Image (tube, rainbow, N blue to C red; front, side, top):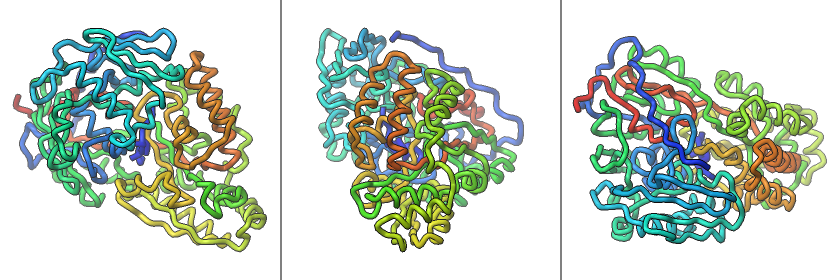
Length: 541
């Protein structure tokens, strides 16, 4: 899984991790909000979406940022899908079953086609599963697939996946919001660089990629090969425009050149809300932002250094001033909304309070920070660099506030902004001892973020036997409350070791032009097949 694996997954996601069959009808679009109709400067049948950054590839398996996931949902599908309420639904598998969480049987949909009109075959699906599990061809997302996973054809349209250990939420892994994007074997093997501007991608969803420029835009056209049903007012074309400057994007929304602006900075929300032709919606995105310490990099191998930095983070001030209250101080890795996806938000919040109330470094205490640094191998301080993705300006502003507090300790922290696609490549490499972790979950797995941050391939390169055991146990735990408790037990060990220092749980703000018809927006909307549910009031179909 992101992340933000996910652009994280706000990063977004950076990266994304990841038994009954249920078919849920798509939500009906709402009426257009009141207000002036946008004077769009583009064709009525084109939906334009402004992203706060660019993509280097259309292949999520190579770049699993949250924006990559949002874009992928319009064209790609897995064996299963996710609806706007965060429930697993059929996709290219019309039904599935498991009796033990270890052996999963999928029955493929008959008559499904790729966007070029060719039939989806069992061989295509097996090929796509091989790609998903291959670290060379899926460097960003193969981590979602446990080593030793076996895949085989067990019937005319039947595929069986056997896991090395039970995983009760494995159904999320085989979705396009998890770790599987089914493609045509012939198309993939003919491509010199799958996902690039020259080769593009091939999926089974309602829109086909027709153009991509990594520093500019990605364009998708609606096809008639999809097995599902689109909104009767669905746009004929969707264009994602990439913006490196937020003021430019705001002007584009204001002038009617954009229909949707994703991940609006908290500082600009009032300006978007003032636009007469725009509706602004803010929802929790279940995201996590915090600091990551690599204990293999000096001086962060000293717990006193890690404690000093954690104590110096004024989380309350950051949430109130930097985020303008559009977030919540984080006391754990998984937010209550994410941890509570099965047991309920309030139950999760109560469990977090019960299990993590005594994490001392969760409080802002400059005197404690000084005392810890005085006990460290660098009592006079040191210099370090903290990178942040420029697509999330709040991360940069928060980093500057943290740097100011550290300066009084003798720690000189240089804050550097990088394009998100460059920032992601530094995570977990050991190049930096101090890193941000900004992860927006793309699934409803209560342990999506924890499973990665405390798993074998975690970006802190942290290894602790009790933590590994708890992470393994929670994956197969069928009792939801017991599972949540194991997740928090593992989290507590890591937070006491100060491997991670949580800062905030986030919210996501989206701007919609008045002509855009859409269901109620929640944290799962853009991780579902959202393009099929969008409509345009003036679309000519």
